[in-house]
Length: 216
Image 1 (cartoon, rainbow, N blue to C red):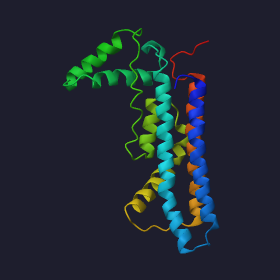
Image 2 (cartoon, rainbow, N blue to C red; image 1 turned 180 degrees about the vertical axis):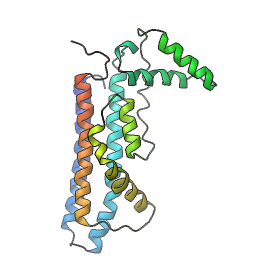
Image 3 (cartoon, rainbow, N blue to C red; image 1 turned 90 degrees about the vertical axis):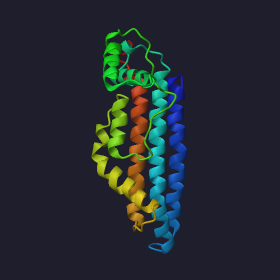
């Protein structure tokens, strides 16, 4: 992920196949007989599918953004504070056996050692959604990458209850009725927040918001 074009192509290509699959699934639901057992089953099964694409796409976008920034090979002095924190914490994590006190001291030493050091951004491992991408985890991941999640903070209930809770209960064998209208509304909402993640990452890379001060 070395160029802006590569990043944007990766964002668009991954979104395209996910959107195509979800639209195909929605078409199958629409073709099923209204309120039939088959349609109800399709709607129930569709919620875990929507969640899988939400988590998978968010993880993909944030991970390739982290990779893109990491491969800029910038110094700590050039980076947004979020990436400074990521770099220093990653360096501390690689030092085994540090007590809590020593970790605090090492962190302070690193922060005071100067801004000219090349940042050690842990881009190879990507981001960790913890296989449970609720709103709190989502907003924390955005914050850790210096991204603004405020436009989707109104979607907290959608993510945590209408999507994640329902997905968990269905995946664990509980019966929840999901009608076609509710499913279609959820389908549109999920595509909307996925598109928000895509746009946010693309704009951050293009505008170089990962830098403490932008290049002129």
